[in-house]
Image (cartoon, rainbow, N blue to C red; front, top):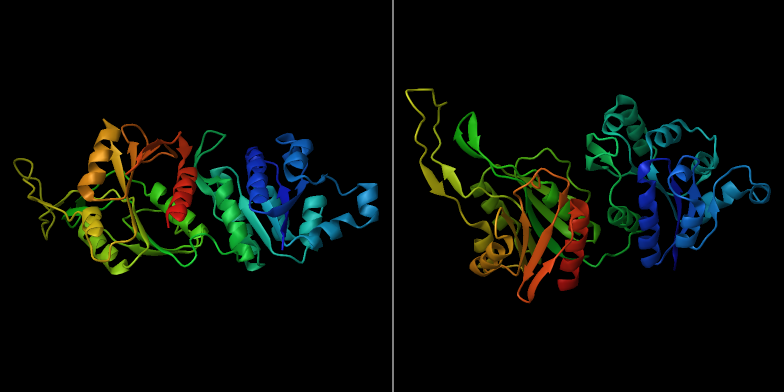
Length: 390
């Protein structure tokens, strides 16, 4: 049976991503009809959306022919799911208040089908009390509101509010339909973030890992139907939908959590694990005549231990964050750790805290060089490669 969605394209710069979402939905066998708001029409044209969807695009409540046939009622009832992407702050406010002053808001009020909203707006708008209140009301009303991505905005600011990648929206659509993804029935273990190695009760050794890439991979794997266990170092990121999160602080705690999560069909070791820990003081170290000497001890090698484990997953994927000779170091690491794949990237710039990544996938058959992509897109591509391998 062909699934049908009604896609409402709101008025924001992210409206251009609706084109890719339509293409992905059509590729997945989902029929798409589009309602283009007046604001959305400033960014994409009805002709583009019609060509991609192979259906008429609806733009107004005042079309004599369509409305003579009660077009907004018919549109709202014949779809299996209504998707709002991008869902702007204004559009979500109207949805929460039950306002029906154009075609999009009228059919949203008239529909008896599930509604999924993918927000996109300036970070300050997303964090404003009014928007948080509206999102809470929509969720209370049964609307599925997925979390926006974090990253640079068209306005120049940085933070949560970016429209999720089209692959992530498609995955949310498929979850709503209850479609079995290619990783259904598989358990995938993911590690993410830094580890904090205490020096004393108030100080620690750490690194610059934000956890964004690992969290994006965990979410992308869950979107493909996997049961995902995410072992996370200290980060301030929301847990991806459908993911079981285990919080740890140190490398030794992460090693124990990884072992406890086995068996797994695949493991993706994204965490930037500290190589050493300190023989920590029970009390705060006071300033003295000079800097204190720190006694360092080697941390467990989580990737190598996992790859040698009797419970070794079928596929073990490691990450190599390098600042020079990236491919050479990654190739040597794959052999040394006995990993199946190594995902290598150059972190000499702003990668660990940034929004995009340029990675190289090192396998037994060679090296794939991926173009620079948003971390969400890297995650989606890697998750699909894992699905193909399993």
